[in-house]
Each structure stands twice: as C-alpha cells, then as structure tokens.
Image (cartoon, rainbow, N blue to C red; front, side, top):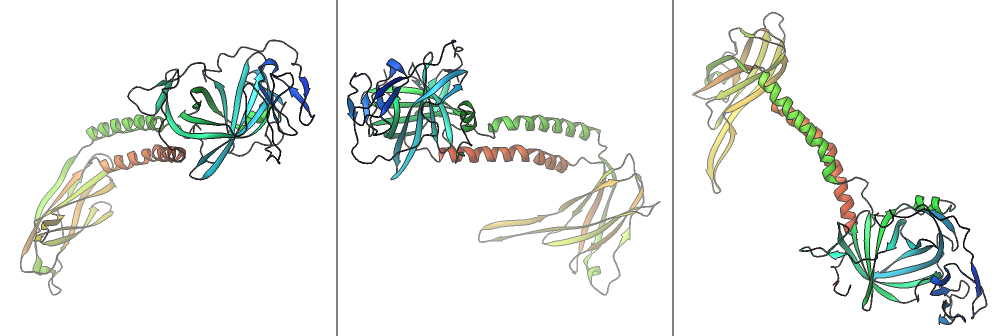
Length: 444
C-alpha cells in the first residue's frame, strides 16, 4: 500500500501523557489522548458529545433517553504496534446505511500516534480494512464511466450510499455527531479500496487495504479470536488469484504436448498393410443360407508394437452392413475382435432433405505386436435381393489425435476449475454492489 510504505521508524519517546477532564453533564472522568488534535470528545458514561476545544467542554449533543450502546472489539485506550509504529485507539464509531429497506452497520476504529497522526481500522462482518486519508484527489478515468485512478491503479465503482453515524465513543479530530450523514462512495481494486465521503460541498478521500482480523488481534494483543469473516467483501482479495495466471502453466504444457504430437506423428509409420474389396450377397443373410464368414490372406505388421487402424467403406444407401472382424496372429493365435457397422440413410420431409450415418467407419486396435496376421471377416445385413460392396483397409502405426485431445482436456481441468472458482468469487463480490458512480465535480 503506497500510503504506508514510507512510514518512518518510531522516535524514541516515553508514552504520551493522558489529559484528565470531567464531563460537565454527569461529572464522569474523561481522557484526552490526542492532545490539541481533539475537536470533540464523547463521554463514556452519559454519551454526551463535548467540544474539546472549549475550556468548559461545551455540550454539542446530549441524550436524555437510554442510548443503545455498541461495544468495540478493541477497547478505548488499547495500544498496539501497527505498521511498525505504536498506535492507540482513541475513538470508535458505528455507521449505518440503508439499502432496499435493510440496515447495514460497520465499525470504524480511530488510531493515533503523536508522530504519525491518525489512521483507521474498519470492520464489517469480520472483514477489516486499514485506511488513511489521502492528501490528493484521485482522477476520473478518461473514457470509462464509474472508475477512478490513483497512483497508476484504476479503481472500479462498487457502491454509493448515505452513511449515518449511529454510535460514537472516545475523541475525534472533527466535530462528530450522532445522526450526521455523509454520501459515501467506494471504488475497489482488491486488495485496496478508495472511499469518497461527501458532506455538503466538501469531500474527502481515503485509501484502505484489506487486512485480516488475526493481524489486528496480534497487533493489539486482544484475547480470544477475531470474528469470522462472513461472505465476500468489496475489496477482499480472491484466494484463487487471477484467472489469467492459472492458464499460463496450461499454455506451456499444451505447447509441449503439441510439439510431442508433431514429433511422434512425424515418426509414425502410417503404412497401409492391407486393402481388399469384397461383395456381400444380402440373400446370404437369410437363415437357410450358409455362413458368410471367411479369412483373408496373411500380411505382415512390421516395426514396434503400435496400433492398427481398421477402416470399412461400404456402398450402403438406406441400408446397413455389419462386419465382425478378428485380427489373428498366425504364429501365436492371439486374436483381436472388433465389431463394426456401416449405415447410411437419407430422405426428404417437411423440413427438407436429411441424412444420417456415413458410408465409412474407422476403428483403432491399440498395442498390436509385430508379426504375421490375417483377418477373419463375417459380414451381416438385412436380407434382400441385392449385394453390398465393402472395402477393408488396414494401416499400421497411425497417430491418434484423440489421445492428445483427451490429454489436453485433462490438462485443462485444473485451470478450468480454478477459473470457475475465481469467477464465482467475483460474482459473489459484485452481487453486493449497486448504483452508479456519483458526480465528482465538487472535488477540488
């Protein structure tokens, strides 16, 4: 976070003294920890808001009825080390917005260091942000509605709502009031958020960075555990990273797989070892006809153990032919059985011409050792008066691109799943967003 990277180390000094005062309404003891920086102070007993600049502590706001108290998670006066510096919690406020009739509240903790000034911790549903006020106004991004740019980073508008101060404790460097409202607009570039608060014609900007409750608890030595974060917060960084990053290893492995495919394809024999055309008399498909099976001549499968591609091409039209094959090793008797069917139909209906099937079928027999082989062929078809011509083609060591496709699909599963999770996380984030970006013309 650029606004905190320049923090200088603490100057050696004794802990600041706390000035003691008394509430003019109820007489309760008060403590002023930010010295001349304090503009208003809240009595922890009667909750009157007092003018810290007035020697008589003039009452700015008082409450006659019972005040609905909110207990801060970090007690007032608690000191801790934050960004390498000693900070003390001096002020706490709860702020509330109304969206579609529902009210949502978050807490703001005001930290003070006499050498470094003020910074804020905000907490909503277990999500924490560490914020400081900006000295410069971000720029509206040219040509892009609803975005602002700060120090080269573009922030996207998340939400605009009216925030009402609903509870206060401690002291503040401004004149605080319960019930006062401000128009708050948030712009996010996770893990950072830019917030604009407008009251009348004045607007201030702050920048926050998402932090964990565990870090807050450790910094201020708080007992127990921080509240568990619920849901996805506006500038919460995705635990799944950016979708583009997870695809980079995939692209590298896919490239290596493509190179391997090209190399192995170039080294493959792809040799035709057998081809013959036969005729099947469909009258032999009748039960009283003799068996139509036969064996081919013997052929050689050379080279190393590899696949055999078996292609069947048939002159079928609105009919079919089924062929049962057995590729048999002449020396060992080992057989590889394959059953295939070639069918092709066509016609015309009210939707126009249609076709179904193909006159060509391809099957692959994997891992066939070299040797002398022959085919046992048994054709079958619907009984009829005609004949069907079919051609049987055997090719040795043919590259199978299906295997590479399956390997590519397997490689794509992890980044695909990560992308889905990342997109789901972002969808959950922006489901809480709403409204268009406000006019920033008053910032000057």
